[in-house]
Length: 117
Image 1: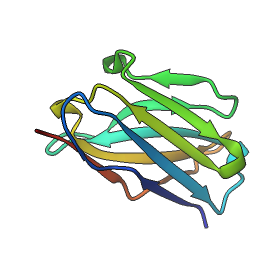
Image 2 (image 1 turned 45 degrees about the horizontal axis):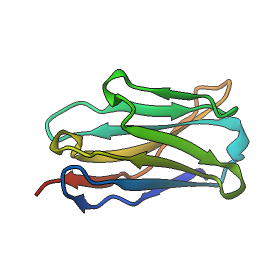
Image 3 (image 1 turned 60 degrees about the vertical axis):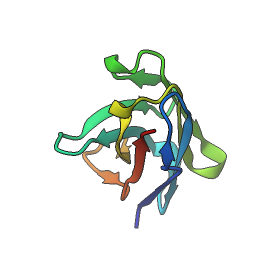
């Protein structure tokens, strides 16, 4: 059974940084493209960043070089380094795994990030 477990969400002041982690278990990590999404209160879930099996990165246009996605195959983990956080970055951040070449995909339970004074 594939499981994704996020961690690292917290309360942080504007301008601060956080690093989120997502550990994948029950799956061959090398076969999955990975992504971070977020869902702010009252809004739809949106893609933040993605990284494919070869390490190619993609970022949503609104990121403006603010976040960095990375993956660590030896630990089945992906990360999201978030810098210069602003109140509008407040959301629950979700990790998603998409199996290469199939329709199968999996979500984590989410980790909340709150940016406030």
